[in-house]
Length: 95
Picture 1 (cartoon, helix red, strand yellow):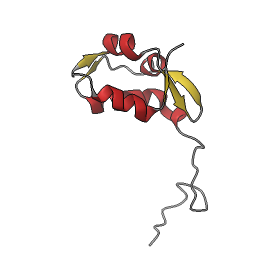
Picture 2 (cartoon, one colour):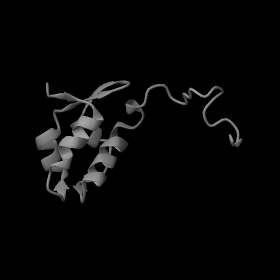
Picture 3 (cartoon, one colour):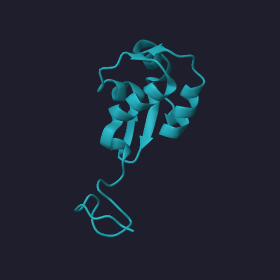
């Protein structure tokens, strides 16, 4: 079992890396980190396993790829809004 981190904490740690990086290095260095997500925990290795990218040119590129890998697991309730009604309902604009 690895270190449990939130996405923001992992993002900060990845900032210190020297880019570009490849998937093998990221999995070796961070793969056993467990991401603390709204829908539970998931390892960085599992998240990267859902995407095809093997090379990361920048910090932003790697973070976006990890976020793509966790997808909806990182989100709390889907289509939730605290503004009333349903998210994405109609094409009305609020002024």
